[in-house]
Length: 197
Ligand code: MN
Image (cartoon, rainbow, N blue to C red; front, side, top):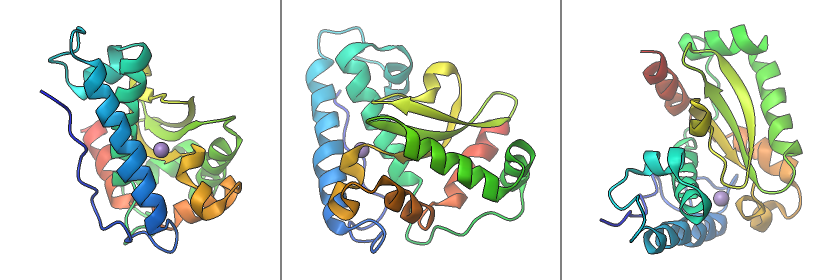
């Protein structure tokens, strides 16, 4: 049973002008698709032949882990973005938790942006919740995924160069600035409510 590339939750040009159609065509259509294909090549004959993607992310090593986690991470990343996004939550349980754990929404944004900007090389910045609902920000290199540490992802920013080089060249901070304008906070809140329920 092969894994499939999940449908993009919006049109390829939906995130313009913040993320271009060309970036999505390469990032989703080439990079994300390649991780799916490579994962499907590696699984036959391994102990993960009937495993879920989440089990692969939590338990696999080497190429199966790298490609499986990149499949998971990218599907999650697309779901964290929306053309209707960017409107920051000002009330509700997620908003309350952000203020409780970071001091203010502005402070959270500063810390998350810093985590995304300073991550050396390729990787992902994550907002995560622990089992008690406490929020934190983690940096993961390469295919890293916080599920490995028992943390629940709520939001991620892909800071591999392929995420921004077409649109922003070497300016990762410019990409992060535009990332905030399209964050799907309804999705982030839904992940959090699901986590604490
Ligand atoms: Mn990517």
